[in-house]
Image 1 (tube, rainbow, N blue to C red):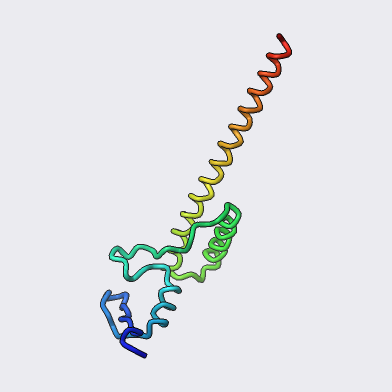
Image 2: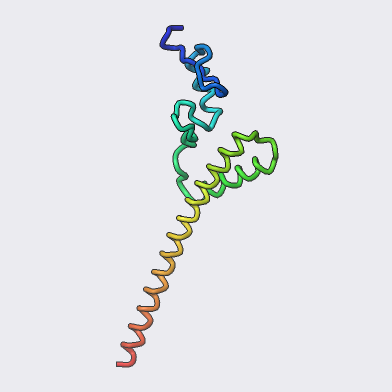
Length: 123
């Protein structure tokens, strides 16, 4: 193990270094925590790429709700899950709004087509 393989661990109570730990151990700890200790504001770490579909976002929301309902999530995990859930809800709402607008456009196109065909029959 080289010095490059060691990274200082952060004590979350004092926000100061405690002792060097192997890089892969520090990485594993970062993956299990949803916050980024390197962030100056303590903002949540990215939870991954945005969902690729409404369906995958809805499925993840169901998983989050089950986890929260289980009552076994700690305070920090609960906060992170709620933040992730809010992001997913916003994504789903935007998707539904886009689909709704698309449907409105289709209905308008159908109405215009009917009006035009009725106008042609009258002539």
